[in-house]
Image 1: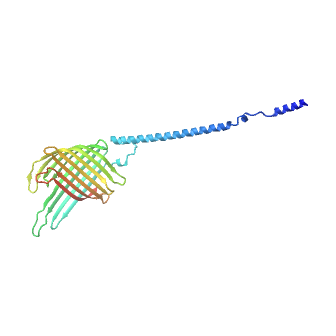
Image 2 (image 1 turned 60 degrees about the vertical axis):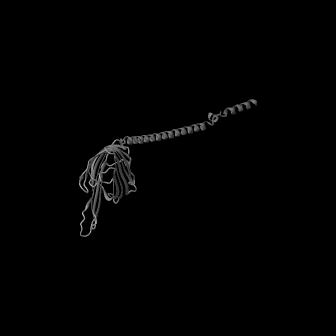
Image 3 (image 1 turned 180 degrees about the horizontal axis):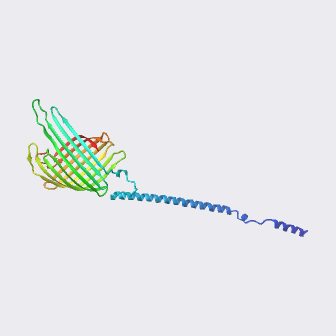
Length: 329
């Protein structure tokens, strides 16, 4: 009986399956999944780092291009091909022409005729600025008269001038220039005044905003020489000694658009003559122009001309208030 029982127990033990390796390590799939998730996170982080590095590289390239354009502007050299230039630096290389005309006529008990004209033209290129300016004034007046009596008219204005200036631009801001011109003023006993000048011009800014308002400032520092021949025309004709003028000249030209259609202008100069007797000449012209159309404007100007040592018998300061129409071509 005991042998039969032992035989049955041994047989049942042999039929019981042994533990499998998977049953002995149940946590292996979980560990594998965790390892896979860590690798994906590392790959995603590396991808984001690469994208950030690419954006940083693009920003560096744009910064380098901007620095190159800025260096080109400072040095007066054009930007690299394909680089977009600022809108206010795109200047049309063509003549900018302005013509002005003023006229006053009175008849009847008194008679007055006054005529004034001006013209200016300027052309700006990458390396040169060329400008021409001319003006002229003529006026006669007859005082009130009594019926049956005739009064003779008298000359009250007769002057004209012409200037030619050429600037060689070293940079966008600094230029050297030469100027020549001639003028006459018979009422002031100046038969002729020929001018030669050379110096430096500084263009502090030249802007034109989107609303078409402009802003411009230029200053000059130069040496001017002039030969002035004098002759007294009125009231009696008399020859006067000629004089020379020479010394440093300081000039300023300012433009500012108050609004889109209203422009303020100021041109002033001071000449300190150190040749012969010391002498100071000051000229100032203030203008306000209002656009009536795209090409036509109405202007009012006030001119002051001072000469510390005018010809004999003449007062040192002349002023003129004028209204005129201007046409831009």
